[in-house]
Image 1 (cartoon, rainbow over the protein chains, first blue to last red):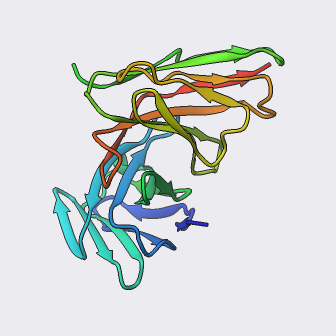
Image 2: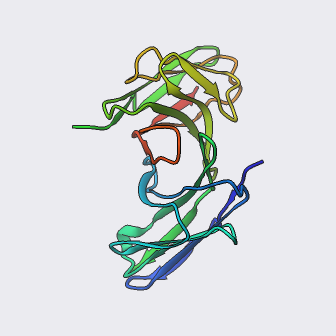
Length: 109
Length: 113
């Protein structure tokens, strides 16, 4: 059974801080990994994709992948109240994605 | 305007009725997916299709049916056999099936009365 594990949270950070979201996956053959942001009552929105070991930066977001440890993380710098949402981690299998249950992030002003 | 549309946004169904949820995309994507999301749960895959006239069961296909007669369209029917259909239903598409990003429609919230 392929699994993607995330801490459900909530993770609470003050405005301007760095939020660190973590994810582990069980399927060693997974090659591609994705982070989605989901606001309450809305559909998930893709914010980062990462395919190789190391860091990938896009604006305030940095995704980190360590395939040896089967670990993916998302860092959000200068967190804003508008970043308050649930963040879903997903790992690509043969033809489908396996999603974690998500981590709720709360950014307080 | 490229994207994925789902309709209706809200749907109410009486027990014993079949209902069909619409999903359309104009992104020229080959692959399309249906997920179900329950409160506090992750996304669970119902069905997916990688090419017209072909589709595969996901993890929770029982009580659901789909068709893929056109590349742009992937409707989902929730049948009366689905024991607990109240959920948020999400359609997604991807350029192709391998290592590619999935993009989601706005979702349909189904409530069984």
